[in-house]
Length: 112
Image (cartoon, rainbow, N blue to C red):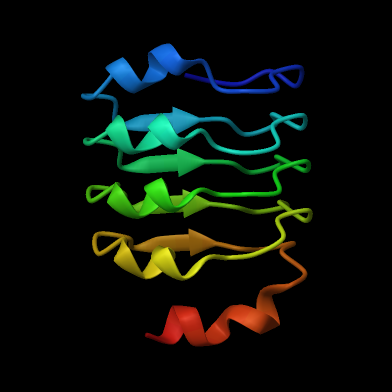
């Protein structure tokens, strides 16, 4: 799935795509938060949120994405916090936080 800038929320039907490996929401500049049903994407390996300027919240359910290898939050400058459950992403190999201005507050989360 790829995004267009007018998308404000991810459709609930996406939770039914449990074999989905890549979710490309880059450029969804009006997307404010990820839905809780994102955790149903058990096979998801790449989540691209690059350029989601209005993204303010990532729900704790992202911690249940056990297959997630790459999370791109580049340019998500309105993201208010990088939650501690990011540590639950054991398969995570790449986390891109360029443009995340509050990063200094969360170095301890990434070190654990």
